[in-house]
Length: 351
Image 1 (cartoon, one colour):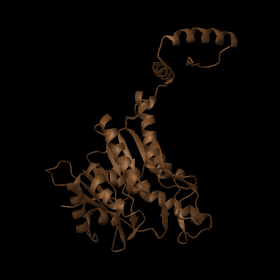
Image 2 (cartoon, rainbow, N blue to C red; image 1 turned 180 degrees about the vertical axis):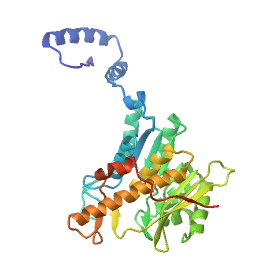
Image 3 (cartoon, one colour; image 1 turned 90 degrees about the horizontal axis):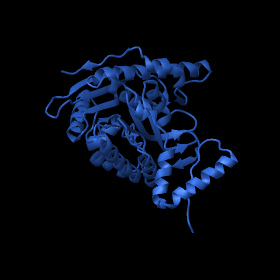
Image 4 (spheres, one colour; image 1 turned 30 degrees about the horizontal axis):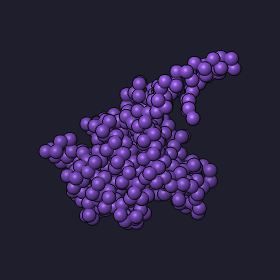
């Protein structure tokens, strides 16, 4: 049986349609079916303005979790990056009704094969050019292994791709991913990352050392630099009941890293999505200040603290005690603090 492929666009009258069918069938008979498919696909491919007219800041592929309600994972990262001027394409590693801190949740988990299908779909339409890759929570070793394939694929297209990795594994001494992910992060992911944003517990897992002081934090950053990434930000360390951020930027393999700290007061409340938001802000501002990680961290920390203060104030205004449950951050209400944060917390350089 002869197979014919006919493509139509817009509204077409019945008489015009018959004429078009006759002409296209005559044309298609002389072309192999496999080539006809390609011709039709090319005719339908729309222009992609984010590629033709790229943002001055960049184009980000963000692979993280997603919740229908609330702000964690991609819900915490995509909107702030867009406010900072980035085109952001999210891939949801999981899609849940709400975050797992609620009594129940429903949803789906994307596996590695499904992730690769999405990448292949983008590749088939020449849509894989990205300036940045951002990854957050990943729940299985197989999915993380596919993410490594994604890194290689993206860098084959753009060798200058910046990979910002939040190695979400646990917090406060508690591991909440399978144990085999720890070694995979340490041995495979760290060497290909451009920037790492672990918390205190995660940096201990990645380096194999206890991190309880500023000196420990700086040594841990140096260990991670030796493994690959030029930028490391330990996003939260508790020292003397204060939160410390420690940042380190090694601009060249033979250069001594530029290192700093930012100290912020602890807010007596528990929030969800803050790590995801912090990493997104660090990506956004460090790209605007590529040679000044301290400045980027000042802006990111100041934004985050403003969001958290507004969140606490709004919960109190609604009659809730912010210390009794986890708080969903007030992201949409904090747009100006994300775009133009007042710098309240300064980076202190280490000698």
